[in-house]
Amino acid sequence: MYLINWEKLVKLLLPTFLRKPVLIAFLNAFTKPIERMHTEFLEQKAEWQYRLSHNGQVFSLEKVLNDAFDNDERRIYITSVDFQDDIYIGNRDNIDQVYISAPPDDDTTTYIGSAPNYMEQADFIVHVPADILAANEILIRNTIDLYKIAGKTYILVEI
Image (cartoon, rainbow, N blue to C red; front, top):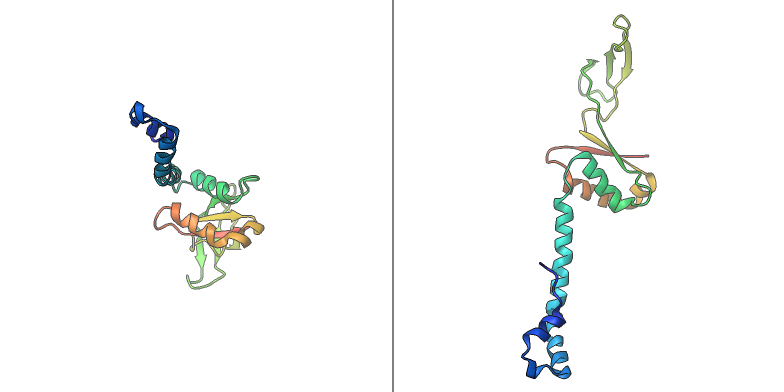
């Protein structure tokens, strides 16, 4: 629908008795700006279709990030933050929170450990190789912000 051969169109719209090489070349020169605008439109349309075909789902966001920044090795991946319903010792302002959790196989033993710092700061974690992150951190953040679901937060982690 959008593919147009402009030279052929000019030739077909011209009456047969006026189809001389000089006149056709002259009219083709007038259509060059329209051809350029049409090409820009097709490129923009392809970009819009790519953006609309991807969303904030994990597999889609991973694909977009790997397509843009690590197309060969595809090392960028996303993990979700594991929220555990454990018992916390201390208040929420502590940086190193301590939580108590029982392992699933043994209900009698209780272990104490420290919770990760990002447990309440993000909804998902984007793991990016260090060389890519150092060179493109702002572009990666902009790409994630473009596709992620509104209200979701993330952390970039080097791998």
